[in-house]
Image (cartoon, rainbow, N blue to C red; front, top):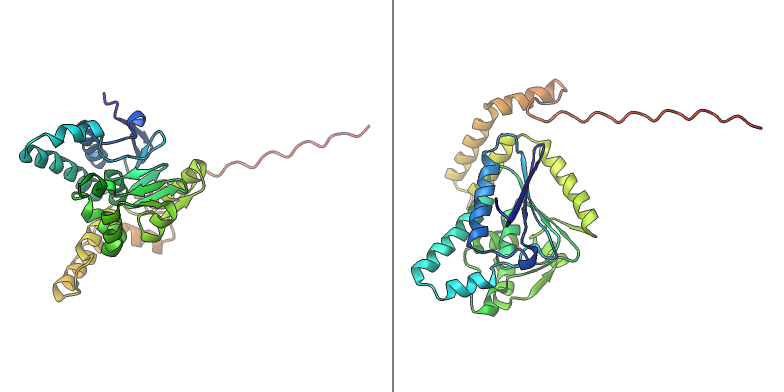
Length: 279
């Protein structure tokens, strides 16, 4: 039983929570392996539609654990490569998960913690959250997270924040595209996150997986005849799929598609109070 993670399921929502508050939810090799396995398990679980990544404690994630860094600093190049590839596998697993992923950022995210946020499809943060790509201060580089962070904030912003290791506040992170929504506090964070999850659950799961694949295929690529052909092939495949045909048919018939969860029952109207007799 892992103590590094708390894993829960609430209907179609899979909750994966970093649970090392005393270590600011920093990574070590054990946490990396457990988180990678938890994400793959959520992807394989048919009833899970959306995965929410969160943390307990003051920090979302401080990146690499200092004790782990001290240990790998004395390791060989080959051992360091193995550790780096394990972290790279985690980031790729999260980024390419077929199901929508949402980051709930309640506190500071540094280094690899920023990588986790960038790998999620949607990120919501409190106003008090801060972000830093702090590796250069330690004489290191944000290497394995760089494809995802650069995709999120762009090469121009990466030039500043990779090289300076400056902190970003939540407003900076929103302006640069690292987070999508800013919340006043944790109660507001959960409300905003709930609305996003509700919206994600109102879409076709196969279509969402295909959308994620489509984005990876077209991002930062020139519009060539090969790319145009690929996009045409993709929509033809999805249109003729069972989910695509059911979705269009349900829309035309003005009914709810069978692949969507049932609508919640409306709450009953309160009974009117009996009038009170006068004296």
